Image (tube, rainbow, N blue to C red; front, side):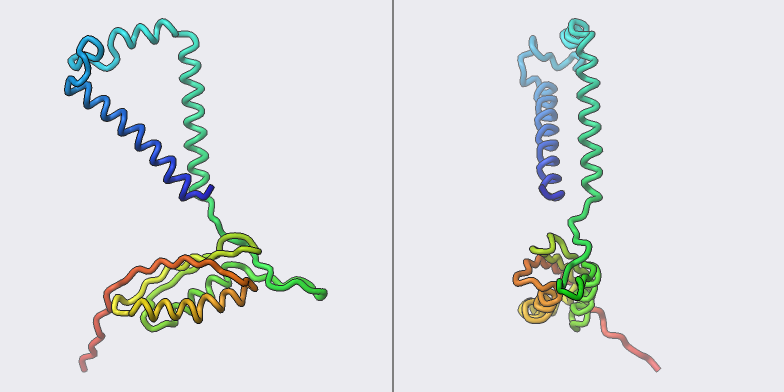
Length: 193
């Protein structure tokens, strides 16, 4: 499972739990529950709750400790997953009797970003390769002039940049995700003499 999908699922579950707990606390405070069951004027940890903890005292604290350790390990795993990137290391370009030719994915990505930055209306570009050697994927991030027609940018990507990357990687197919942020045009520079 990808880091992004795991984040969305985990945060959705955590948000749902918080929403339910908050809704129950609000309902208790607004006297929506029967007052003999959940009186709104008493503290949350009242007599029945204290009785529950004392009745199951020896093993309840061990169960809570195990639950706390599980939550801590889950949080630690989530933190480690945040630093994991889905990038390729080296890409095999050619295998032959003379040897193997490899290129780093960073070099291919840097070349693609430089090629895109050379387009007049593109102000900045970054590229990243993901996937494996047999099924590479590309993620491009562009900042472009808001006056640039998207059809021109699409044409540049589909006829120049992506085919060059596909050729460099020796891939028949290269799924590409492009994120474009549009920026206002820079004001013209005026030189006063």
